Length: 157
Image: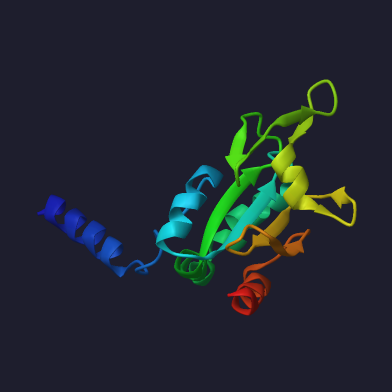
């Protein structure tokens, strides 16, 4: 009897969770974009961040966990998560972007530098919005909450 009661409690807890509580943003790689655009043209959102940036981590754990943001991004955009310090080459738009060392143990990927530079400097986090021809249409280079992001996404959709 005790086991049955525990099973009922567990099942009812799972069933009562909000239906989108397990939803996630669909992540894409730059190398996939050409193929995806052949199927459906969409704008691209690139989240440029580093592992050491506390504002970037906060956005990952708050802004991008909001169900309304997840749903909107998944429905209307291709979302790419780009670590600016990525050491692997990135192939995008018929070009190979490489890691450029800037110090003894620091550096930046050329693509992050191109997409994330605003007014001659790069800061983190940066959101870069591209149209379906891979042109930058908007950049936002600071922390943004889910409400602010939804407003921008709605205008750019």
